[in-house]
Length: 552
Image: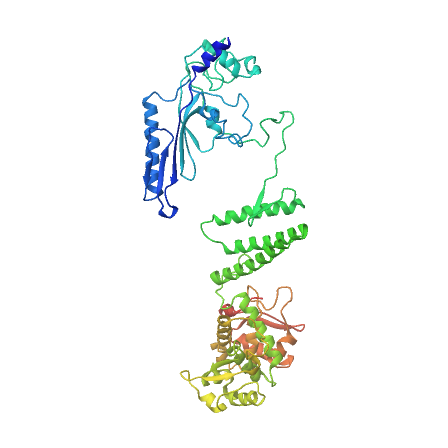
């Protein structure tokens, strides 16, 4: 019987395999590619022009082998599974490198002709395998199915290969006494087939690909006690989120954030408001992760995320004219200053209020405008037209006061500065802003020019000039423009307006004289509405000057 079994087993033939691969040929820098086939009769081919031509030739070579197989009748029903011959290494991790041999019974189904192509485009494999191995192999395509084998003398070999419980399983009878031959266990001597096998004369359905279970094949989970679903492993900023990270809400937030960033990268168009919100969430999550784990590199990552959120918000404001955190329904306004530049403008206003050498709104206005011209290096250019436009008839008096107080230095006398023209401006020097002194401002030359232009637009407003607004009126216009919200309302939403004493102090006026300046600005359509109540200046900028509003 043993001799008969061996004789019968030799009737089964090994599954055929054709492996076509591309490899570098010669020096890597040359880019030449070699095409090789596992069949000895196929000679190597070389392609000096690169991988594109080699891939075309490899596909043509694979198609030639497939055509030859079809000419010979397609896959053979009595062939052993070629995947089984290599311990199912094509789809079982560890099987091809010293791992345990897969248990008998893993292979099954009719013999099929398959083609596999790796995603890198460097290897193609045509093979005769069983249907189960074909379904379990990723990127494997079934091209043809072998008809049921007509051999009936494989009973002993099949009985030796199959599991005893499969042979004795009830209800395995098949019509006609013959079933499709499996690659690792064929028909039984009584003509019965394993459960689920197709009747004779009808090819069995090829099993569909299935998800790989996390349980070990050697110890499958019992149906009575289903295995727990493992936690999904998160990844964010090239870091794996630990499965045991506590609190659980932090682990979920980090996992969702990683998914959100990857989804954002696939968007066809950027959404900077959304990206800024993602960076803010990342900063909060990484700060908490650093507190939990004590890892200072996570805290550094959180700080970088905060800076990225701030930069992204500013980019959004510059592109759309609308802050990223603006409420819904607020009209888009193309503002002259970004929120960061508006903060710098308020810094300059506070500095001028504290460092004006002489009293009076005329001097305060002159100090403000000259400070903006010389903010970067302590020097700047002005013309007589600038000075007379700011101060009118008071220009000469105010300049002499500043020169006497050594706040301002001119290359010549005041009269020459007032006569200077745009083609030959006067170079002014503000000693307190020279580079060898402590620097009160932290902005660059681009922001300085933007702030100076913004102040010039406010001070030179045409309707304020028509209403004969003086230096105090223009100072109030500057101060209110620098302290607005999204809709142009003065001050923060929760403050109920601006503090009247601070407004009066900036304008170098007593508080009771602010009212007449506010009325003048209402007449000049600077304010859409304004009133002074309970020591606060409340109101809203008119629509025409909203672009000059500096957001708080």
